[in-house]
Length: 309
Image (cartoon, rainbow, N blue to C red):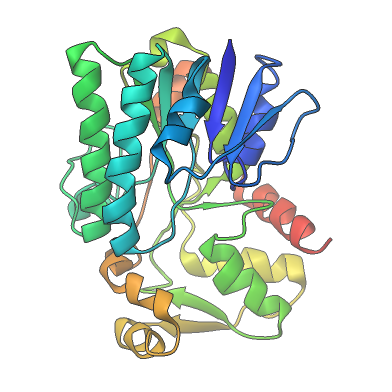
């Protein structure tokens, strides 16, 4: 049976396809313009806003992985995510496919952010978080009813090779490579743990192919090194052989920049994540499966090597 990735061209979808090769040669990659990762991959071109295409993509699948990332816009999220996930859930039930949803931490209560576990309170402080909480509830409701076999794999903010949208890439590495200062949201001296994308992909593949992992939420392996944003910036500067100069980006500056850069309007409600320690605990996964996260130093080295090609 086929294992299908919805959103196969992204930062998680590509390494996930590589990892799934350890379990099956029947991998279906679904995106607008899918590109083979493995020689035997099946390519399925689809616009996931077309719900009929979503159903066709899922038909015949044993496991469906949702790693898609929609435009980072509250308006788009409110319109697209619930409708899309409703179709994915219905199609998985109809075609008897298991569902693996790759999630973030937005639904957690603000007070949980300094130490997040799978049992942290769900009480999103942002509008985007409310959308993510809605999706989570949609999945778990069907699992509890016994209609759907699903699990949720959750990551912290992530970074890694071939990851175009990481804040560590855009605001730090890219700026250093242009001779500019790194930019940092909130307080750069607060701890901020990051998930390395190859680790997240490996863990997601393991979970999707472990029968007793279903019906649960899992934090994928994430560094236990309690590095501050400033220390992450210093690691990147060291790899690029430059000085770790930082420009702090407070709320008022984000609002000013949003006049010229529309996407900046989406960030103020998320600043709470950068104004306090942000520690993502993945002990549950590590104890169950026996492997942890790549070290921060190695992960940053690999990220910079990829950017320097």
